[in-house]
Length: 142
Image 1 (cartoon, helix red, strand yellow):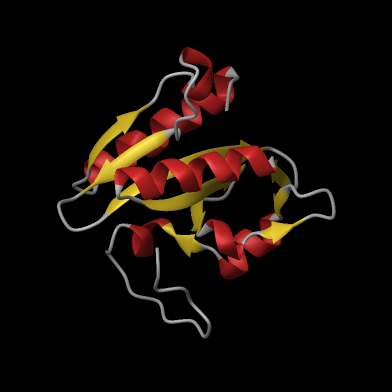
Image 2 (cartoon, helix red, strand yellow; image 1 turned 120 degrees about the vertical axis):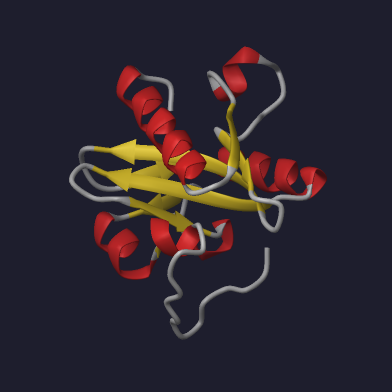
């Protein structure tokens, strides 16, 4: 996210993770501040560590480039964190996905539709361990 609204949404996510007991850090301007591709947010609570690429949209759907997702996975593996894509649509909460669970377009990019986020995404409370929601086929790996 590189716009004012996106920056605001990232700060919102950081604050919510902090309130949930996570140590959290936002990488300002993500990849533009450095030549290295960095996730938008790093968060951990001593038990689980996440590298999060955060995206928000007033509309539908949200797209991520193949390079963004590859960089997230690469960083996460080297850092020892779980790679997650966090999406937030207007009038909805944050939802999280393992990169391998995202829809891949014919062009090699990734897409999340609002209805997919609400139906299949991990909601914020579940993400931070406040609730457990069991779904068939849910990923348990990194």
